[in-house]
Structures are given as structure tokens and as C-alpha cells.
Image 1 (tube, helix red, strand yellow):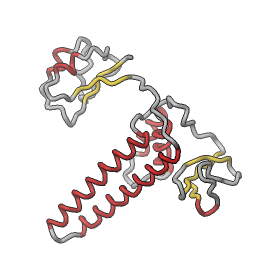
Image 2 (tube, helix red, strand yellow):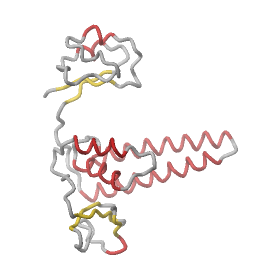
Image 3 (tube, rainbow, N blue to C red):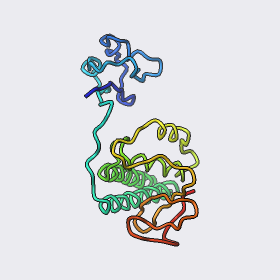
Image 4 (tube, helix red, strand yellow):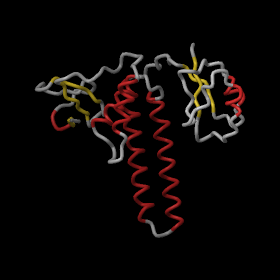
Length: 211
């Protein structure tokens, strides 16, 4: 399995031993991001890095283990609830006059964020090549969660990554995407076609059009 080196900039302490051991100069870049076009995956930089900031990762990941659709839907709902908890805690922290309450609510928000991330990984969003991860990116493009959402970067990411499990297909012209508010499944139908959730059979007001 071919691997390449990647650097976690938050861990990098700028000791720069990687610059001396890399045979191709892949670690010596102006933006500190390892040049994957020159990296041969030898691992010398990762072995020399005293801060553990460099790791070797596969170029191509195997498909994720499949989970039952009902399990994924339940985990999605749980993650959404955690996101609501985080938002509520941040709102309280922003309006709290008591410094102790403000710190507590920020800690609660952080805890909810970490829990949501773990839940989403368990639901199968760990690998970017998975179909549900790509579908999630598409849903964020269709309905950005905030004004500052990096829409252009998300579109570039979606265009770059190839699905490795057949669970995602590029948006076809003349289709409309819906989200089921009963089970949170997202699906597409042809323009003018009556939408019906393929997971739970919900119709009408239980479906939300995403575009």
C-alpha cells in the first residue's frame, strides 16, 4: 500500500529535522505542507520528527465497514442533537455575566463538539472517500451551516475526492435533493417527480427540499 507523509501544523515545533533527512526535499516548502508530488513514502521524516507532527497515511484507503442504515440514521440524529447542545451552550456563554458560568458553558460546548465528532466517526464519516462523507459535504454545499462556511473549498474537495464504496454519485442535471425530517436521510429525485424517502417512506411536509 503506497503511503505519503503529512504534517500536522498544530503539533510542529519547527525543529526541522525533517528537512535534513528527506531525500527528495518534499518537506522543505514555504507553506510547511509536505509536497506529495515529491514524497516517496520512505518515512524518514516521520521517524526523525521529535514532536510527532509527521505521519504516513495511505494514498488510497480501503472502503469502510458497512453499517445498517437504521444505525447510521440514529447516529446522525444523535450527532445533530449534540450540535444543538453546542450551539445552546455557546449562546449561554455569550450572554453570561458570571465568568464561572461562561467558562462552564464553553466547556460544555467543547464537550458536545467532541462527542458529535466521535458519533459521526462511528456513523462512518471517518474516511473522506466514503459515500456518506461525500454526501455530507454535498449537503453542506447545498445548505451552508453559516455565513462564513468555506463553500469554494468544499466544492473543490468534492470535485477532487473519488468515492471508493459506490455510496455517492455526482449530482445529475435535472435532479432535486431532499432531506427527510423523520429519519434524516438525504436523497435525490428527478425534477417534477413526487419525493418519497427511500428509508422510511415519508412524504409531504416531512421532507425538506435542499435547493
